View (cartoon, helix red, strand yellow):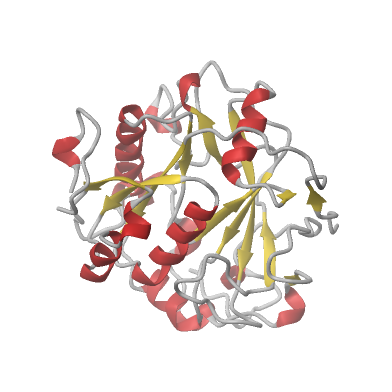
Length: 312
């Protein structure tokens, strides 16, 4: 136990380059909304502090799922700065395989019980931003809410440690090199939603489950403004090899076709690509992302790297 109470009913589960947009100087800040992000945590201590610091800087609280959390992570949550944004910790024992659907189901239970205006499905190696320079997520969600939208879609930018390493404990990472990952048309990462809209990642018919990427419900009104998801997929090549060659996945999810782009690759596939194959920001805090030439596959699958493609 970490000394944090869960909401009623869940206590038993607890334990081309776009220009940078800026808010005009002197413009009053819009009101913020209470936002809660749900995050699964296993042996991810190197990511956890950075993730939480970023959320705190964005005015977002967080609910954590303990899926085998390390002692170091539990100790981190006892520090006052991190306890301040912590809604609760829910236990989901690790069964020896990665089970995304099970985690998503628990996130839906958590979302149903927490007091919040907006809800965010977040992975621990991701950082989300408004596309408007200087605008925090709490204010950005309020702005979208006031415009009558119930869902925010995100564009995903995969950062790789080419020019700078991943820095544990940093609220903003120093990496500049990235690629725009967009394998499908239309809204793809509906990760933030208005709670009162009654939306869910679980479709009426579970066989059409979208793995947490899409939302379902009658009040689905997607904002035309895509937000930013910075995804720090691997901390270095060795981490990538461990993450994807050692991880076992739920057989049922593999049968469904989930995780197919992460299974069956030899360790050398995760050697980092040459810099010329990536985009680059002018500085680490920039939001002027280049969305041209979207990648539809991940770096270990790229055709420009035939020596790395060992997928069977």
